[in-house]
Image 1 (tube, rainbow, N blue to C red):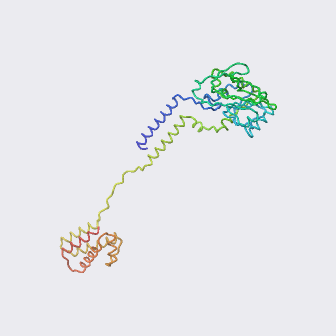
Image 2: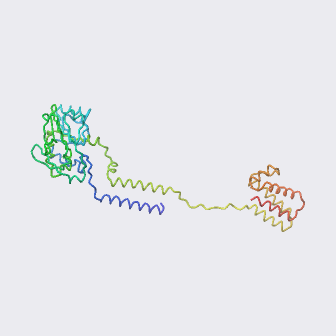
Image 3: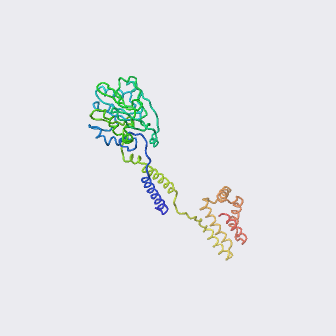
Length: 382
């Protein structure tokens, strides 16, 4: 690893660690999401209800993500959801459970139209934003059968039932203006209890104004036998619990993963550039043959044997044509054209050069001027 890459890696690790530590130590904002989950300690989870279930239920209490049809008909059933979408096969299973003696408590802000039509009731719903402003909201009094009044923020207990035939129902709780919020009726050998204020079962509902006795009183409407608390109608089927899923659920860990992946991508892009030492530019080697010929020419010139020098020069020139241009010398027009094309020398100059060569070969002696002229012509073919 090169020095620059090491520096980059050290900076990234330092920033990564600083971010994770900072995020872990930073105060976490309150999560106001309504989950009803027994694992959540946020205001609208049911962690406290699950942890203190042994104080409320004398019989076994369990949490499940099963549908009504998947739960034993002889046991109690507790359903908490924003919207209890019980219809079709679920509704038939519910009625079957009730006819066989099961006791069901459903706490929801809204109920399916099929369930409301079957049991002949309606619900008046008020929508509120659930966040820190809940502490600034006006309070509302909830009165249970024990005639004890419990104070809740209005946004938690604003929904109430409208009964088509009140004689079929028993009212167990109402808000101060006598609007029912907890009702029950017998169906077959069992009993169904409906609550229009499901938030009273959450962590916030239990702790606000120490109202946990109110929640315990409502849950006591279920008889002493095994109770199944199903989260299916709010959260659906349980997700697989894997270490990686937990990793993604934690904000600090999730964002650190995203930063790590992004940094690796940047690192790969930077490192993908071609890293190579500069390639030196090497000049092509000089034509040693020409230098050799010039040396011999100078030797012959000093001896005043111009023809011998010219023939030596011609011999090396023809050899170079064969090796360099891959041509065989034929003293024909076709050859002259090929040599002109490959060497870049004008065709007329090529013809004059070979005419000079033929002239020298046929002469007994040549002058110094002729040797110089031949040399100049040959030097054009570089």
